[in-house]
Image (tube, rainbow, N blue to C red; front, side):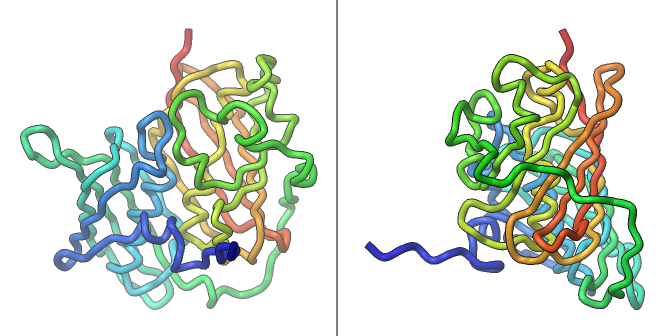
Length: 281
């Protein structure tokens, strides 16, 4: 039997499922795939990649540098429309906003997510790096665990796990064994299951693809994102990514998650912070 070829950037399930079709200037259609859902809700990182692609078409620069999203209502698989607006264009940066809409039972548009983003060209950035940041200490991949090694990372329907190469650091897996650490940490090796290498748009997925840090705080159930901001720092090198997410403060039913994404060349390629709601009690 012939071995299936590895997917490449531009020719993968992720690319097909995030591709938007321009209907008119600033208006794009897409059918949100059920393959990127967690407990029937469409993953927030996947949605961010969809809007990111629409803005890449609408703006004169190709790469998201910073993108901030407010999640207004839960998205579901099926038809959606993205409307974009160019706010400003400059020589090195351009800024735009976009909203994704779906339809209610009466056929009216319901806004699901709204983003504001600045785009540039990552290939034009200087090589100078001065940083105190260090890659997360994660055991080798063969000493980490994925969904195939035990229960699904998220209780219930989790189609997205079939599309991810996710190997979790054992020290952040206490929740899966009934003994959460209480530290609010999650670390993992990350990639797409079909072998597609990372690019700026899949980094938007990576920051929101691990199990919630709330699990290690002893809280189970859905942790919906309220707001998510991602900074893309450079184009990732080929190979698996390392993702580290931490929570320092849970208060009033909300927590923050700070994520770092490192590539195979030990470069910090993406950072994010999100505010999420948790159900206590």
